[in-house]
Image (cartoon, rainbow, N blue to C red; front, side, top):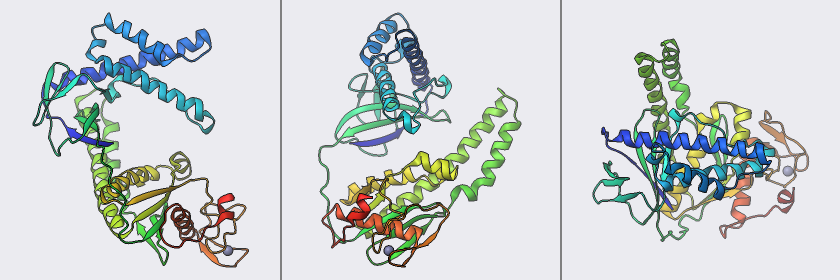
Length: 377
Ligand SMILES: [Zn+2]
């Protein structure tokens, strides 16, 4: 599966797509209301099939709702169902049930097999109208879904998910495998069987924070609903997009560098919610999740492997030299002496050594010492 993103030409006709997104938002909110009412009346969860049948019936009598294709309506119901299942399974970990959304901020609608057609070149027919897009790359493989997305600036993008049957084989070229650990101060620390190295984050947001702060102050001073306020809002959104673009650019370069150097790259699965609680806004600035997405993409392209180690594995608390596991380790402790072998472990270096060892044990690479005590703990 591959996700391709194209920008649509700016055109008056785009307003029809935006109307469809608005209508999708209204339908979404209606579904949420139905779910809530159904639960109040019957004390149980409204099934996806029942909801779909009911919404399809309502749609027949509502011309505004018909701006959204029947497939997209089904997709809305299925998405809400998924969100509820997530809530049922993980509410103890703090996952909330899906709630109402502002229609103005509603982002997208998705079509599956029907409702669109690629007409060759850069033209696509959505509903009864033809739109053009900036064709930055070929669309190869079978198209699975097509999503129209609206950004905060009001631009429209087309996101196409294609299924390409040929997945590249993993090539082992360098024979090197590295363990990585994300950090607040140092973006990444890694270990590759001989030495540890640090990759510092360029801290884009910190550098550009002044301009962002100025822009948001400007926005707060403008009268609500005024044209000036809308202009200031767009200015602020552009500043944020600028930061995101520079960061993404850096990620691409870094992931290419790392995948050239290593055959396999081991990471801990992320607990973004937990990191956010501990570290605050900085986490979204560091954008670990986005980095991993790009890394996985580049790695599959080059036939390299990204390995994830379960985040419950105590990578920080385990001594990488003798596998002794500490009872507890404060987040502020940057260094600790192992009570069993007396070695002084630097927090980040020690963690990525462990991640490398556990990750390597899942592949056939290198001669790797297993540490069963650490895994059991
Ligand atoms: Zn030790």
